[in-house]
Length: 163
Image 1 (tube, rainbow, N blue to C red):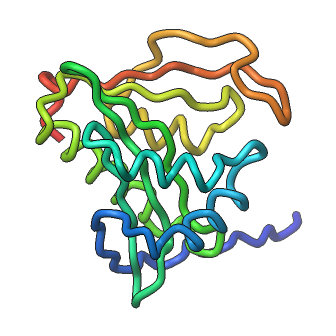
Image 2 (cartoon, rainbow, N blue to C red; image 1 turned 45 degrees about the vertical axis):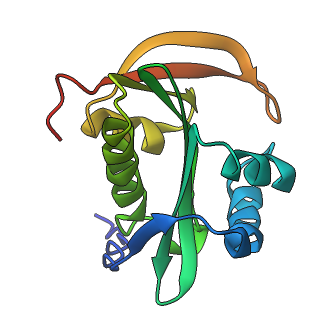
């Protein structure tokens, strides 16, 4: 019999979720580039910051941006377009905190449902979203490039969920 070593879970850390500021963009871009094969451009974040129909949030710990989320709204629907946590801070509840705050933001803006797309292979994200009440409602073939992959479309009914 062999003994297997298991990594202890990282301790949760307290974060403050607040609106993203222009001064946050360098940290947001660093996290974006570390998290995605096809990262958004800085100009995308700056343009969304000027849109009243968008909400950009950051998670901050001890004065350091450790994660962010981006949502936008049309009529009574919201879309979680981007969410990421600094790789050094993953597994500490920051993603769930950002997701919960994003859901609260969608509700406060009158959204009846919240949508997102996620890579088919991203099991950690699937588990996070399903635990929050999202359900798979479709797929988008070849949605992602770098590498090419299908997206799972997920939806949270904000009228029925009481999270």
